[in-house]
Image (cartoon, rainbow, N blue to C red):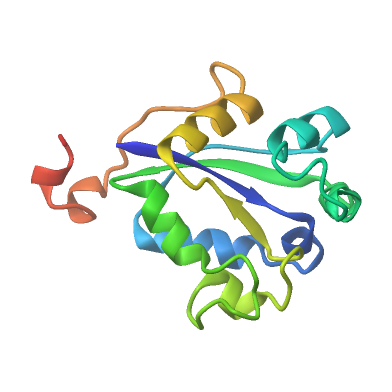
Length: 155
């Protein structure tokens, strides 16, 4: 099964949306393999947003992402990365489709509720960045066979 990183941004924390967004992932059938709250340091922000560091709006990103602690989470499931990305919606909440997390809860490009890994390579690097060994768990939920066609579980 695939793993992906989700970050509940300060906009989700401040607006008390964590439970509602988390329940969407759980109802979909994704498994929580790791979760913790943390304050993002300047170093981890610069590493995570390395592609944005030299852009003029990076100070706004930094201010936004350090406004409160964030919640980082590892979700696991069949094709978890693409499933989470589809559920997340377009980066700019005003352009995100209704029914997606950003489409339902965001009106902003920056204050857009969550971050979700974009690819298997990004997910692997991001999970390693935010979780230490032993903080991501491998277990089998009792309802797994009622969530997936069993032929998909071994692929």
